[in-house]
Image (cartoon, rainbow, N blue to C red; front, side, top):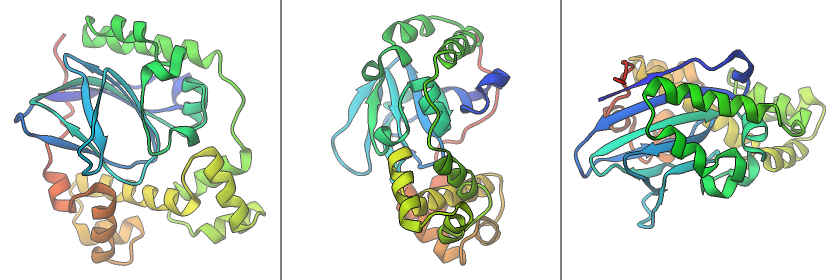
Length: 264
């Protein structure tokens, strides 16, 4: 049971925030909460398709290859006792460059790779499935570099600048809009068109991301709240429950991601 990360080719680093291979054996009734983050998610499932849906809704679908946009509620992954796959975290720039679409149309959706054509072709999954872990990383990287060579137009510059500022240190939306020389309403329109989330939602997700990283690394919740930009621990807990569907303690008790080599 474990996972392993692999650094991407330098040319891919502005577009790929993370690349993780994982192989878990779990209780058959284990349900994993896919949490909101500042990255879009692409998953290649091996052995069994991913059984995934939104929140506490009963409906779910099965995916061998999945793209999930930015979101503000948890996805529920029914593990059925086993999870084996490769997961990519893409920046919004990566969505345009590697998937061929802006982040906005993918927001709050779970999309089969088949719907994205050459970006996530079925033949890529078929190539990856029988390979060793080392070869999977290599073949996927080659595919992404080839996609990068065909990248389309860049996103809206003001939206991208706003994204960088709101996902960095804690910032107020009106302050960032003023710095960029646009109204708060105009900035919201730009964000919805480019990312599918409002500037306020992006700032909240980024704050949650910071808090989750700190808490996962063992920082006490009161200190995490202050460092991540929450008013206090109660504020952190309320917002964490809204994004994760669980308390901070319950989230951190879910099956951990262990950075250890995978065999093969």
